[in-house]
Length: 300
Image 1: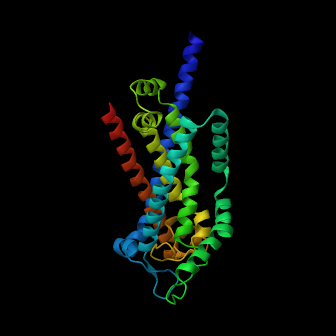
Image 2: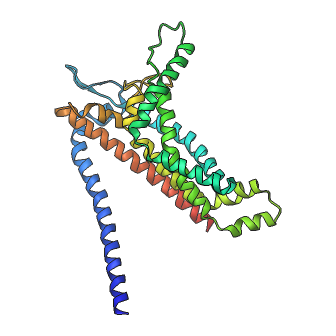
Image 3: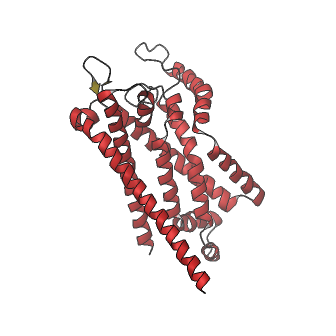
């Protein structure tokens, strides 16, 4: 009994220590981002930084407006999530509810491989395969339009497609686990009452697993917001209004593109861009987690 009590006490201590480290890590990152990002925010001005659209940090009269950059991040993330979450959910439904054992195992293995591919490979494939296809489409749509600035296929649409593909493994994996965790008694009760298999899936199983599905959506949003390398390779990197065939730059690619040579106020503003991205991610996660909690409370 003494040995068992010692093991339990030791395990509890280890778990508490890990939790404390995680909390301190989050607090430390938050404090560091505010310390490094707030001074430039005060110097440039909140309105000039967030709502103006001209970014010329190396000009004689520098401009630090990230309005289009913030908008591109919002549009790209929102669109990719709106596309990726339904596709991921339907794939998870197929794997967990409809596929046979062999087919399901093949699908799960493919999803795991998709999740293991480095982001730079997504960017490379997007740059070599997707961008030429987008350029051909761009030429057909804007043929004869002398006002359009051709991007070679490196545009907002390419970035959205790559982001959608990149968030799929996370959404599918988490959603599949959530669907499989639903008790078989619920399925049996629904079928016993005369519901079809499809009605059982969409009216019983998915609502019962919605908390886990929303968690997958939150993780997908985090992946989409935080992606830099792949988007830097396929989006073009220009500060433009985020229209489908415009080259764009997001908050993450802004930091990656210029941190290597930035100095003085320019470097400080890039830390402020990181602070804006950090706050944006925290707000989105907080809102979605509150929505998930509200959904669980309503079920209770």
